[in-house]
Length: 172
Ligand SMILES: CC(C)(COP(=O)(O)OP(=O)(O)OC[C@H]1O[C@@H](n2cnc3c(N)ncnc32)[C@H](O)[C@@H]1OP(=O)(O)O)[C@@H](O)C(=O)NCCC(=O)NCCS
View 1 (tube, helix red, strand yellow):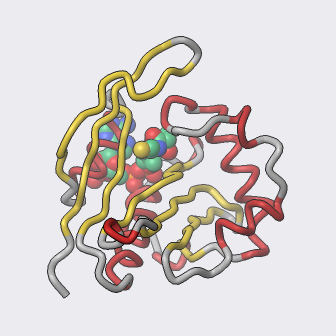
View 2: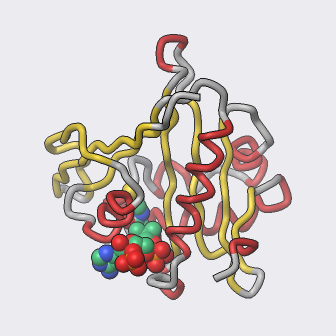
View 3: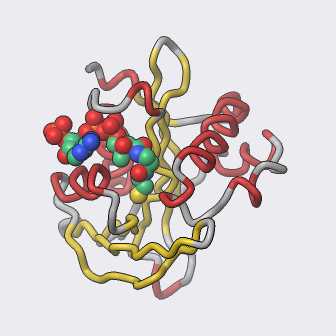
């Protein structure tokens, strides 16, 4: 699959990003810390704020037939004492496109971007402990588990643990 299918999202992508993000929150609510209830009122204008080019973060999209089929965000932690860490968020590939390498392409783009961010020493993420597909993807990219949060999410009355994972970036 050509990597040109993956690119950084920019302001004109806001409406399709909003649609995919809401689809994701409805389809796999246990995969995300946020919820449809909290985000369905966000406007494309609000979403533009996520993707306006920033030094400290970016969102990437993967496209199939020119339609947004997957997304991922990477951002630097804001606190002064944590600015050496980046986190991955909003990782999602639409069900019809899964198993074709798109998730891996998105993660490669996010990690490559983190490597360009000055002083980043590690990339962190959290994944619902029973999410074998995402956990296998992250492990295959070199992420290692550094902890587990018990009962991290409560979705429709069901409690889910989260695995905390990190990828160390070499000194630069
Ligand atoms: C996790 C997710 C992003 C993977 O996207 P994808 O495009 O299907 O992934 P890829 O085709 O690039 O596969 C990459 C790797 O993921 C793992 N993987 C993907 N699907 C898998 C499955 N059903 N079972 C086990 N491992 C799987 C494999 O390690 C695979 O590598 P391989 O093909 O060399 O074996 C996708 O399943 C998804 O959006 N799930 C719902 C939302 C979600 O879980 N987001 C992550 C939140 S932390």
